[in-house]
Length: 560
Image 1 (cartoon, rainbow, N blue to C red):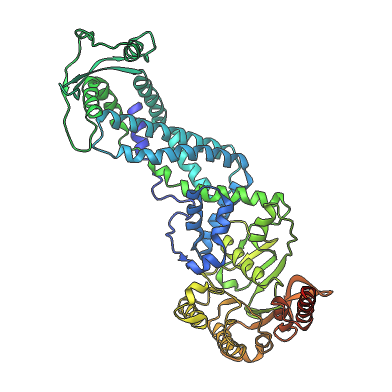
Image 2: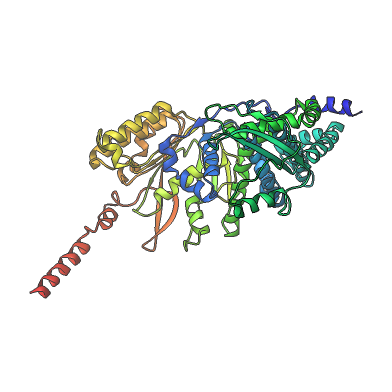
């Protein structure tokens, strides 16, 4: 009966091809965010607030940088995340199991070390199987006690149930318990060491193997007393019946004492080693390491679920995105806000977060966003990127609702670091990055421009910007092009005259009763390039300069 059960267990499908990021039969087909886009979307900032662990931050960032566009893959992830978000108890139990799996990952190197002594190989193999049993049992328990909806977690539950319900699993559990008990009964070893005339250890032998640890009245106590009190050498050898002494092999890089000790232990424990090895040979096809492949997936979902819970507790809306097929064309996001603002609020900063709506369709696919300085243009542009980014990872998004046609990648064009413009100059660097974006983007991409071409003269910047927007219409990619160039947004009719499937529209950030409202809506641009706001920002309006002059004159008069 036992052998039949073990045979069945060996034939159970493994987790080697299973993933919580990709449904069965789907292979990764992602596009990677550029380092510039990662920086412009503040992915490092976000990851640092999702978890304190450097390792976990790297895991999360690596997944976040890979943009999947397949609706089936994204929906698969959305459903898994929804389950993990709904059940806090499930998250906590999986986190406990992750600690064991993390240890198993460290243990893998030891088990694969064929230079290690047989006894240590067997003990490590026992630890591996013990963790495997505990994790299968734990996953089976936590998935079975919750109403799981996602196909991913249901598939995982089916797998662990098939393992757990096999009669062989019961025998594996019992065998490991017996073998661990057998190994665990060895609690101490008495060692004898021979020295040469230079007081160097040359031979080591085991006096006895014991089922109890040393206590002070025993041999260990006598040894400590000898070291602390005796000043003379004992006459003769108090160890009777010493086992065979082995000459220590002097191999470079090895500890002679420990190397010899391991050799002696292997021989003295020969019977025990043989018995354990015979039992373990029945489980040769069983490996717990396939479970460790799930560690990054679980870390990603659990840490994000914990943070989404924090945002909810602060009263911020988060929602499960509805992922549309590409044929549906239109994307609608209601009540979106910038995730960075949400993080700042969660961290205790006293800020008001304004939520906005956006729709991408054939009639409104390329937005030229204008508005006053510090009016929220950059914040809004980045927020749109955050919604697409999180939605396509299968996460809840910072919005009241979202219906997303996935993008194949997100390209950003924000002001460059001055250190990167030394060779080409700012305009040259901006133009180079624009060219690279158009060489890589497709009609399925999302493009986010933030004050592009603002580093050159107004006339030159406007001339280039018009050509860029015309090219965007020809490309057919969804775009936010935020700019201080009011004139660009007044000429949408000319730009819509070139061939293309989506239209250019004017979007503005508003002012209510003389104050910035940070609300974004469709409307013709206001003002002339918001020159007054630019002048005010740098303190060069007439009133500001007049005040500065008056202060200087007063200070000079007081000095006299």
